[in-house]
Image 1 (cartoon, rainbow, N blue to C red):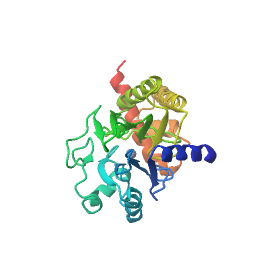
Image 2: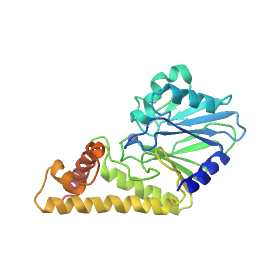
Image 3: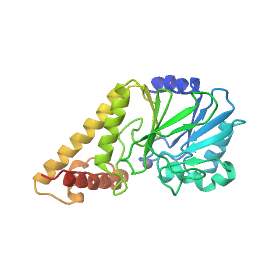
Length: 268
Ligand SMILES: [Zn+2]
């Protein structure tokens, strides 16, 4: 629904948030990586969420978007290169700007991120980003709450479903992270989702419920396949992910490995 997305993009802009879409579309990244620039209330400073892939045009677009504002913080939602790649040259385009990341490999000028941490990027009370640890897609995945918007990284995407990397991610962690986001929405703390790939969403409760039920349904399907005597990840993927295009097959195989590890962890 392009019309609905236009409306949500305008809502982003009204809240002082610019979406800068990187030109790295693929079956895994959808239209490409969404980098976000959050502006302070007075417009004097800004926070960059997910620098994105190492593409010169994307770097230039980010620098242009920040404009004359002072970039006071960078937050990385997780380590994957389509989010972190541009950090390799951060000394050139964001010298001295602290990089907040769970993975110490990427954190710079500050301690690694922890759950519940708040990062002020301006002088107003509202110029704050709150970190919600949402491991699962990877073990270093975080989401960020600013105002009543959840920047979900790859934990929840604007369309389709996300993958659980394996062995970096964990399906048990991922299910717990979805439950946590569902609780945030139920408490009224989150009204829209700004994902790292795909469209803005305001049907947050439905979207999260769908994500959870989809995962649970897949687990049941895998359990059925196992019960039928097939046991390798390849055998399971051939049945449960029979319909995915070849380009997504490696991702499907990783998810199956995560599912098998999860089912094994349940015991019986
Ligand atoms: Zn990712």
